[in-house]
Structure formats: C-alpha cells, structure tokens
Image (cartoon, rainbow, N blue to C red; front, side, top):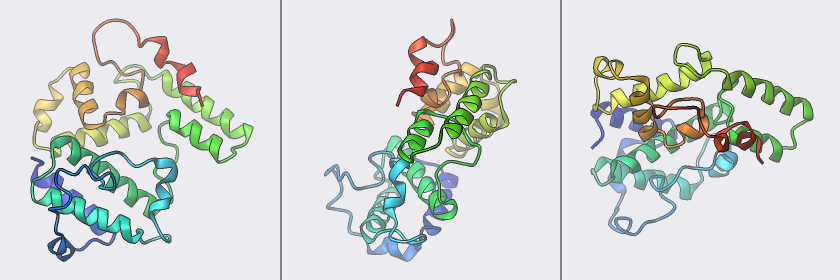
Length: 221
C-alpha cells in the first residue's frame, strides 16, 4: 500500500484537476472492481501525444474522463489498487496536471526520447527542429556515468528518487547507500520506461547497452 505522503501528493494533484474530496464520497465503485475497465487511469499510461483530447477546454477534463479520475481515486483511497496500478495512476494524474498547466507533458528542454521525435514528426516539424533534437540527443547519450550527466537527466532521476522515498520503501540514507546499478533497478520499478528513456544508464554489470537500444532505435519513427 502506498505511503501517506504518496496519497497526499496524489490527492493534491487530483485537486488541481478539479476533483474535490467530497466528490469521492459519491462514487460507487462496485462496477469497476474486477472488470478491467480500460477507461480507468489505473490500467495504462496515457499517450502523451494525444493527452490534450482528455480536456474539453484548456482547463476542464471531459465529463467521462473526470468520472474516470474520480473512480480511480476512489479505488486508491479504499486500498483496492496494487502498487503498479498506484504508480500508473500517479503518472497519469501528473501528466494531466502538467498538460493543463503548461500545455505539454514534456518539460521545456527536457529528456529526448523516441516519442520526442515521433511527436515532432506528427506535428510536421521543420528540418531545423529535428537537427536540434539530434544534437541534444547526441549530448544526452554522452552522459553515461552518474557523476557526468546533464542537469535534465539529474532532475529526472531525482524526481524518481523522491517518489521512491515518498513510497516509504527506502529512507533517503538507505537509498543513498545503494550502488548506481541497484538504484537504477529500483527506479525502473517506479518508471517502467526508464531504460527506454535513458539507454545509457547501467542496469547490470558488464558491457555497454546492446546496439538495438542505441541511436538507430531512438531515431526510428
């Protein structure tokens, strides 16, 4: 079960989407339990490319999506979600809040991933924009060691570390004592896409990451 801090953060984020504590008292979640309802925010990560379709204007969720948010939070509050579902819910609510408040789920100057290129392609990006992304990706891929990463990578890893500590599974001191490989394995549990985002991170002893996870794969559209 998630920690108190995790739950408090989740409810605060949901509040920024318009959900009030009293809204959770109106939910009858019997129909959702065990049905695998695909609309709930606990089942799969929202696609960042189309996350704006969850809003009917710049500030309000679609009525159906608001009901999904309310039902998902109700299940969380009643302790009916497993750790993976709780993590997916937190990620989705965070992305919705970020999109509502910034118009994007990507931080300006943020991490370059496969989806960054695909999103630019679908938006009809100019050649100069692809060139800029390529330069940033090349710079990002040079950062192969914990002490030599860009501020953007450090910030992303720090955010995951904060979530790990907030879950109550590790104290700051205990987590800091772990090797970087052990940390990355735990980080991957909290962010299943971590290895795809940062193929230069080490998750095991031995050689470099296979070529299948290298630059050619990142640039594939």
